[in-house]
Length: 123
Length: 107
Image 1 (cartoon, rainbow over the protein chains, first blue to last red):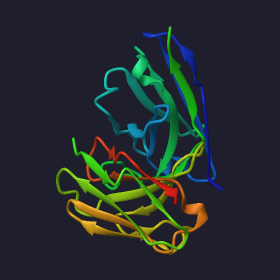
Image 2: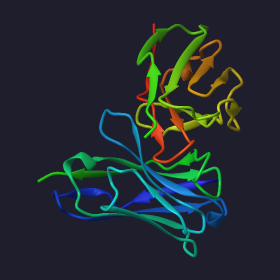
Image 3: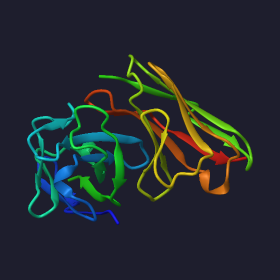
Image 4: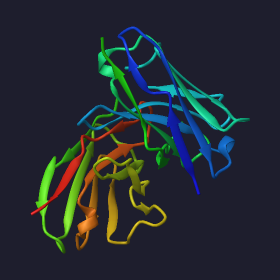
């Protein structure tokens, strides 16, 4: 059974940093791309970032480029999202998602989702 | 960036109704269109990928069609557990983008 467990969310001041983690199990982690998708309170879904199975390719939304960094540790089956220079508009529930394919260069869809970790950016 | 527009944004329907949700892309995305269902307080669930392929475990009353810029999600004979918000998502190119969602409510 595929399981994705996010952690690391919390309350942070504008300009601050957080690192989210997603512990994966139930599948061969290194064989699949992974992604982060967020949802602001009461709003729709917004894709944040994705990384290939090997970790060699990464993709990010313009809204987070230069501030957020996605990475993975295939030896530990963990996905990360380093978030710097946080803004109020980054407040959201952040979901970790398993992609159906090894790469996210095309046909990148989200087969399994975690339950999310809440990030609140406020002074 | 490819913009995804869903319509309607909400609809009311009764159990047993046939429901159709439309998603339009701002440029051609071939058949790289996916549909998700999200219930309140829960993570989204993949229903259909690459326009018409049913994700494992998803009931056959869900179907998808379309190509290019226009796509539809159809639910034949709406069931009580289908009341939720539905999102389309293009996987043709990054940045990946979602539609704004369609909330299906009980009439």
